[in-house]
Length: 111
Image (cartoon, rainbow, N blue to C red; front, top):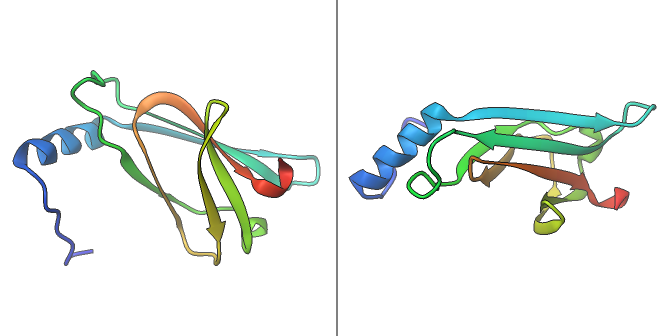
């Protein structure tokens, strides 16, 4: 990633950097008795005022092997806000705000 660059105002870069440094992440996989992961809860918070620090942060994590070639949906509360197809074993990228709300990534076949 040494060749990456970001086009943004200095103010946005500063706010994003402070938000990223203050972020706390919790990812919890929920499995059945056979060890199959059906959903993942993601909690990201920064304890900073959301009126100023409101940039989504990008998370990168590995999904269960059983999710390859399947789709999942991302929920914020009861509202579905995204759907993803997991083509390979590569790391999964997701951008969410550190707003202290639990997001849930659910394997679509379990809905």
